Image 1 (tube, rainbow, N blue to C red):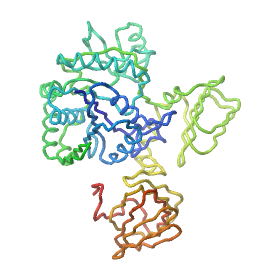
Image 2: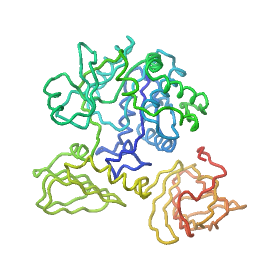
Image 3: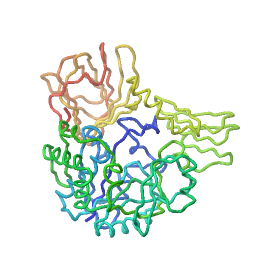
Image 4: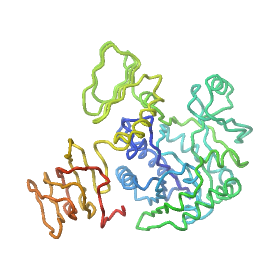
Length: 471
């Protein structure tokens, strides 16, 4: 059988401010309304012979991934998860996936490793390339996919092909002169970071070329918690032992060393969507070369890409700019410098600024909240709780909360009392009191929450019971 393995992680720092630490690049929606993650899931699930899709992701993103899949799933396909407590690069992720697939489906099962944040626009060509890769994998080869280059790109790694499907060498991101030579030669392909191999083959090759990574991952899996439910398996990696896994990319740890490597050249409409310049190229241009997603008015402007979700953006007399407007941040960058957006993200993270991590709309397993306003010693949120969902039983040491139900009905634990709060009714939660909100209804529960106190940080929370397994 074939098991698509979707690697869903990373920060997507070059796509800030839409991409954030807890809303990374795979969750960014394209023009058709689907996220990159949803496209990756459908891309794998639609292939013949697939009876399980395995996703390797961060524990914090698990429920968000589940919601994404539910939106687009067309059949009840089993979905498995390997949940990392933190990132240890792709070699650890591939090792964990291979060991889990071997345990669940046997050594002959084939893995198709896909990045959750890449775009492939030709599904038919992709399926044909996978079929060729599977044939090579049955011969014990470790197969990578080489994308025929359309330009001299300095932001990608390259693969030099040999005879047949053999690989002569991998090349790191070249300078422009080398990239031009590579494209002209016809022997080089972009390294798409997708792989196909049997579980037994990759485990044997990792035992040979990067045994420390494989054995540390195996030891971690033995200490990790596995939960099995109808249609899903969750492996939550043990943080202490996962920290012992060496941190290295699968390219360096294995692909550049193994003699079993093979390449399948293909033209599948691939892009890694690695910058706002790449995102802009997906939209049609007007006569002045401007591309717009959302609400924008331009006058005497050329070669710009503007994206605005809510507010109207006006631009006059500008050229070759990228403008990305979100509810709490605006990015303005020269098109030729779009790769450098990551420096803004790095500065925000170094300063501890919330804009590197969260949007004003923050998704939680029970639903979402939106920050409506805040100031000294107060914060106002709009909470939306899914039908049947509940917040954890918790208390806050430094803040009190006032809940006003806007629509739906809430079953509220407030200290020793359990009360029902309907639309246009409210309850007050003093600091230090255990409380919980549950939506017992069949429609979303919408609540306005007013927080008041000397400290309003999200880390002022002590959980006593949580149905989502959060600490």
